[in-house]
Image (tube, rainbow, N blue to C red; front, side):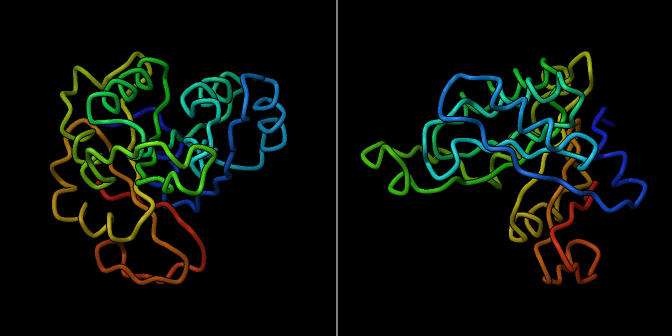
Length: 202
């Protein structure tokens, strides 16, 4: 099933996709996100919105994605397994689909010892590969929104290899993976990439 993701369309065309990262603020000021979005307008194909990066409490990735989408940018929702169990992760994914966020990057997340709450408990109910599997196996009726379904990405070549075995059976969600700088991955195209490049698996 196709999504309304502009990134997916570019990848299908074989285009080189350029993304940039946008870190939400350590506060509730939406104007901070808008200012960062204005700097990226017209310069990138998608904006990676981090999920409490470096284990520091920040505005949620989903909230920042909605702000950027309202500006006409293509947000990529980062989701880490560190802070939420599988129930909360799926709930947030459904919310993202309902709000028209079509791209998801699944990550493990930085250890909480690096952040401003080192005493916090990590969750890791599932890892990033299992999160991708969870999303892809969710019923199409659950993830389909008025604007389409979610595209799922993983930022590790290990995840890419794990995905390759069942990418043809992912159901309603488009699985994406990233081939990392100057690494050869037979599970993708077998070509060496000179920089980070998103590649379609299904």
